[in-house]
Image 1 (cartoon, rainbow, N blue to C red):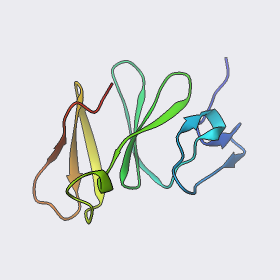
Image 2 (image 1 turned 135 degrees about the vertical axis):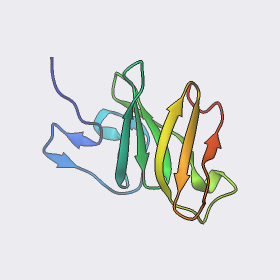
Image 3 (image 1 turned 90 degrees about the vertical axis):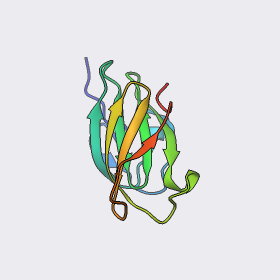
Image 4 (image 1 turned 30 degrees about the vertical axis):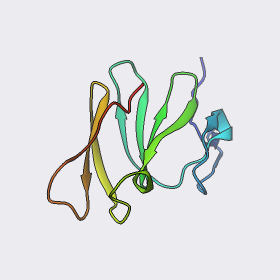
Amino acid sequence: DSIYVAGCDRGRYCTFGPAIDGQGIGATFQGITRIRVLPDNRLLVLDKNAVRLVDDTGKVSTLFTLTDTSLPGSNLVDMIPSDRDVYLTLDDQPRLALAKNVLP
């Protein structure tokens, strides 16, 4: 078995630039602030203002970004997955936001 970090070349070179979806070291991140492990062992990653999914093969896909929503001026602070939904806390909102049915 090997240890793999998406966006890094065998742990030596980690790239942080534009967020690019992809497989293995082809994926890049902008700035990871939170990681949650889902019940099926996939990773839900809060990457700057995007929520991204890393599957067990190392494939990274963006589920959504705040620019896709009606809250483009906000910044994501935390996320809580629940079934297919993701609850979000935002830096300028006094309540939880809900992204419905975003988890495949």
